[in-house]
Amino acid sequence: MNRTINFSAGPAMLPPEVLARAADEMLDWQGSGMSVMEMSHRGKEFIAIAEQAEKDLRELLAIPARYKVLFLQGGGTLQFAQIPMNLLHGKGKADYVLTGEWSKKAIKEAQSHCDVHIAASSEDRNFTYAPRQQSWRLRSDTAYLHYCSNETIGGVEFQWIPDVGGLPLVADASSHILSRPLDVSRFGLIYAGAQKNIGPAGLTIVIVREDLIGKSAAATPSVMDYKQQADADSMLNTPPTYAIYVAGLVFKWLKGLGGLAEMEKRNIAKAKLLYDVLDQSRFFRNPVEKSDRSRMNVPFTLADAKLDDAFLKGAQERGMVQLKGHRSVGGMRASIYNAMPIEGVQTLVTYMREFEARHG
Image 1 (cartoon, rainbow, N blue to C red):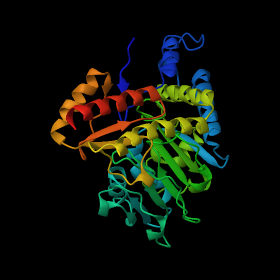
Image 2 (cartoon, rainbow, N blue to C red; image 1 turned 90 degrees about the vertical axis):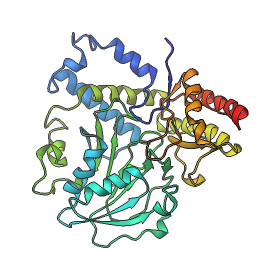
Image 3 (tube, rainbow, N blue to C red; image 1 turned 135 degrees about the horizontal axis):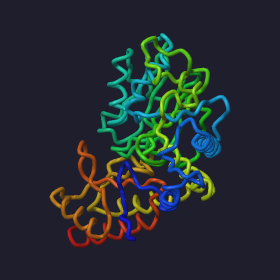
């Protein structure tokens, strides 16, 4: 079977090995006589699946014992509200860094729950860089600092972890989690939608320091209370069972490759291959400051936007799909997450050179 080269920003491609394993176990998971989709979330079979998934994720990210791992629903978008509900602790103030569309959405949602202060912004240059920390202005009485560590739409990635002292640091890491090693101990909370580097849409992972939970706002619904979810092992209500199962297969796939250090090497090689072509070209352009370019999401434009449709049509004829840029910025975007093989990027850059030779 010929599979397309899928550059979608999410839901994104999954490793073929994971899909094949899931297919083999679709009707009968390990002799249980059931599909994972049919299992009770409180049955011994699924509890074993969930416990193993958490164990493998903890190992991959070296998550300290003082952090809770939650398997939730609602996507990153629900976290935009859930975070202030749980982390304000009565302070009523939170600081945010504005670097693109996703941090903008997080700010808008948080404004319904607290006084939001923009501690730093890259809007002055159309969200094409990560603001240097010396320019940040944090309030002394704020509850936490939130930033989006990789902006999926704009292709801006923080290559460093902000130093905010004792202030809880909150990161939306949806589009680059598990793409590199990460010092979890530097954060108060990390959250990520699964549909980019982890598994199917429908699962959201939250990694939160234990001392930050248990002080939610009075009006917080029980399913949005981190403490209640932690006490119930993420099973306060029926969790996204099949998505957790597939995520667990992805964690095992990553461990089999050699973990996140090996994955980072592969991602660096893929990103370099694509950015080198962009930098050598007068026809294609990437707007992001070089030091802040994302390894996962690579936006680019053509010299003449009238050629966009022709570029996309030619790409599809060569088996490449989902290269159209987000509607808010236009152009093209190649999302090259963990599951994208380097051969897929090689196919893209070969086509880009051919297209430039014909139209440049």
